[in-house]
Amino acid sequence: MLCERCGKNEATVRYSEIINGKKRSYSLCADCAGELGIGTAVPTDIFGAGSLFSGFFGDIFDHPKAVAASNVVRCPVCGATLSDIAAEGKVGCSECYRTFRAELSPTIRRIHGGVTYKGSQPAKDAPEAGGTAGKPVSELDALRAELYEAIKKEDFERAAELRDRIKALEA
Amino acid sequence: MSWYGKEGSMTGVVLSSRVRLARNVEGVPMGKRLSADGAEKLIEGAGKALSDCDRVDFRRLDPVTAAAYAEEHLVSAEFASSDSPRALYKNEGEDTYIMVCEEDHFRIQSITRGYSLAEAYSHAAAAEAKLAGVFRLAFDPELGYLTHCPTNLGTAMRASLMMFLPALTRQGAIAPLARQLSKVGLTVRGMYGEGSDAAACLYQISNQVTLGITEEETIKKLTRLSDTVINEELKARRELFEKAPEDVADVCSRAFGTLTHSRVISCREFMENWVSVRLGVSIAELSGKNADLGIPETLTYKTLDTSLIESQPAVLTLLSGGGELSPRERDVLRSSRLREMLGA
Ligand SMILES: [Zn+2]
Ligand SMILES: [Zn+2]
Image (cartoon, rainbow over all chains, first blue to last red):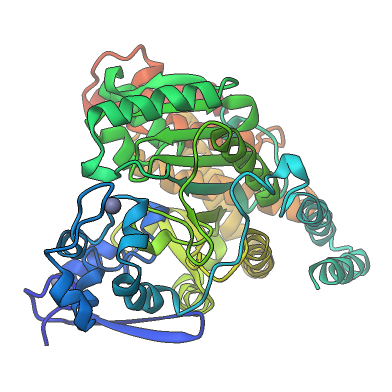
């Protein structure tokens, strides 16, 4: 079969990953596998993590409404059409996600595993206002540093004690 | 002072902790749709929001200085080499760097020394709060922070640790480890690698999932799994030394000799020997300084990690005054700086 990424070369590398319990497998050619750092150790930007396909909006047109809308509806802010987004693999602005919500959602579900957002809200619960991660994890940082020191000194009794405290905090 | 010149916790295994947040402004086009005027407004507005930061105008920066920022891990390689309007805001005291007009409007990065993800996150979140005071950040209750690329939707956060794993590398344990971690949503990448071998035995372990998990959970998960990796690495280092103490001492001593007595040294030769010396420092530490590995006790991770960054081509060129250097000139200069920095 042909490489799922470039669609040009014979696929020789089978790659799978499991995100949120969903397994995805890709067949890639050696060039693309190399470019993506699969089976190799080529450093890439960490923001590239997971962006296996630059054009992963390719399945956008599985959605029947999408085909009709692809070149007609434009994002009111940036002017992008669904075809533009599919071709680039990226949106034109934040409003695109709202304009094309129904059409984009199958793809987003596929990438992220159909889950909804959990996390901080802009500014409101930023750390200065008593934030999300701040304190409990900082305490963990300190305990872990201690644990590391204990392991280095082979003080396993102390290490076990620290591990318990870390576990209790993480629970 | 940049992260590598600082003290930190667990630096024997973890060189740095990094948290990146991708943020965009509501209603402003992204990427190639962003106009020059729009970019200018983002850069100006960010300056108002980030009044505690120094601004570095990357459009007017010479390519060597720009590349040096990337070699110090302060900006992405793409940002360093792009030619569109862009600026960096940096707060060195807080270890926080904000790229304006990278792929997203803002990429906030905090890079802290050693194992300190929570600290990195709190610095990054503080910078985000400042931006949110000036801009309306693009956010959706179902999708989270709206990013240029849909893979980053959600928290739009990448947390990562730069880990030194020479003993696991030697055991051939990295590939299975990477496979295992990828199953639970983490990514392992070799740094400074060519092909399949990461010459410096440095790896970046980061979260892959950004939607359906909170920032705190992401950091906890990454930390929990990294703890296991750290313990495995320390165990492997002990085993390595217990199995063949003379051989380990021989390799470490010779490596230290090479770094401190060369006259011409390539980046590759430097990195290979750097790995052995750094491993030697760690083994000496693990053995309670009883092991004689031919490395002076006064040699610190701080000095070693500074030597790693300062041996990279662009940083090295800058340190020599910025004039263009041939590869040969760089190799000569690298060796003389190493003798100065590490010399017994
Ligand atoms: Zn391909
Ligand atoms: Zn748009």
